[in-house]
Image (cartoon, rainbow, N blue to C red; front, top):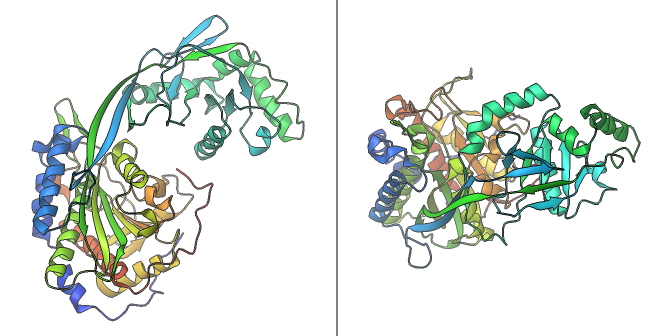
Length: 500
């Protein structure tokens, strides 16, 4: 874990940068956020009327500033993001002649490809260690995995996809009562449907997972569950044939989804640079939220109205600087992205369909929830939490610290930057889709609070003075990145095991 100590010395203040930082005001931020987080926008749910209204408001702001709308095919300020919702239909597993149904007997998650009834061979891979796969033929087959570690399961599932596995039968616990508690707790989540990028089924390489109980696992493998865990222990002790001795019954499955396709939008505003204009700095924040549930409106003032307004005001500061002849050397793409709450969809779509080459993108500064003070005991409430600044570029981290020491003097909290932090924030907002492509990032946030993802996340609870100061830190950091002589050096590589 990093400590925010003043070991990165302040530099001489840039009077020009300070002049335009002062155009970022509490009054402007309050005005924009009051509109974006109003009841009239109905919680800005992805694909719904309120999201379209928010997109139009942001587009109008970018247009008024004189930013270019760079999206292709004449779309201007909107990059169309092709999405679909998939709601589970008739999904079942057959073990011999016994039929188990989704939600009642197991939970299905993952690929939304439709299939007729498919017969599959299930290979027992124990706890899914790399060693357990070495002498097992899994290509075109299904696997059964017993592992309670969520992070390890994610890595194993990704590896299984690369090995050509058909489906995955997952046990996240070896206790039947704990499994039943899990089913009860997450039933609504698994039944409400999922949203994803609309790809042709031929392009969809994802694999579905059946989250099953210990009793179901025992039935599939035709062994008491204790025999399965015993086989794992024997294998890990050196008996390399222990897993192969577990032979399944005949298993088949069917997956069926009802799908609805629609378009959402990333809202883009482009400010062309001067002598280094082919290099691009990106600033991101997601502008949509959770919408409505019954008569409750989830306004998302902090999540992420605060970040969206910050991007809008930073764009205004840079546009004013350019109008006065002080435009940035590098180009800047200001991007309000869609679908973050649904799985980082808008930023993922941009990363797969970039307007400007990713190899020319020097950094992404991503802002998500900077309007509140969370419920942690920190050294100071005059703070912002940073994630990712040191992951790929030492220079970016040092630059960030230097900008703070020179201009804003916030307490920089790196709690969430810890790779072992249970919330794994580095992988949970839109910067990740840049970082996984080797682009240095900083994620600005202030952590969760009691109103997170509730209808009580409203404008009246925003700490506007702190929000403005945090926004200025992002501005100064962007100013320095956009105007320095050389692009940031990427001196660290992405850990292939550190994935979402």
